[in-house]
Length: 282
Image 1 (cartoon, rainbow, N blue to C red):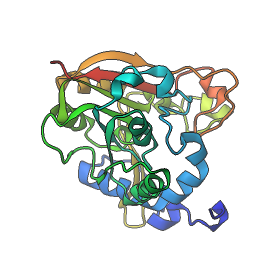
Image 2 (image 1 turned 120 degrees about the horizontal axis):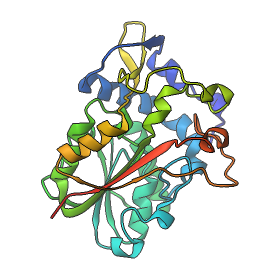
Image 3 (image 1 turned 180 degrees about the horizontal axis):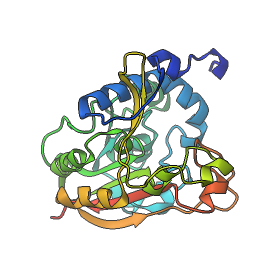
């Protein structure tokens, strides 16, 4: 693989010119996400491919693995289950599921990310089906899947997470689990800095204006949306799902990896990830 010096940065590729403050609707947010991850796919996987693995199910930068957490249920019970991964990226979680006998489908908005998923599927001999689509409009029939999951891949980047919850409810079979990870909402008040500067509050927890980067014409090039923890719970409940657990992984002892804003310094003081474990009632 080429060194990172040979990659164009995603900011250059999408024409990022600055940061703006305004609301962003679903269509603009999805388009920005597609362009961003198409542009950043090579760089992202060059930097983080070793962290997420080719066929590992890692929920978060705190290095919580599904092998240990069992948030989708005991691994032995996944055999034969149809599982939808929302925001699959290069699809390592789906390949982990396939190794355990599940029948996963990996969905992502980015063709660039799915290109890597297809390459890895071929290299590893795991023909996981890949679907390019946004999370707010899932292109599947009702009650298609036994479970669904998302390890950071979609929910922080959609303008209407409530719609995603309703869509997942629709495609799940009764009793099916929906487990998704997001950056912990309290992180919103701090700057995205893994060091000392990342310990100082700079904005309101209750300010739901998204973080928005724009090009020279003011068009969104990157969008990350904020919801409070209460918002996340209300979205789940309003969709008719049942919240079974809220997992806030602690930073593990001896884990020294800095990943973006996640670091041992910050992880020792406050949570960086929230994982909501839900199910569609039978």
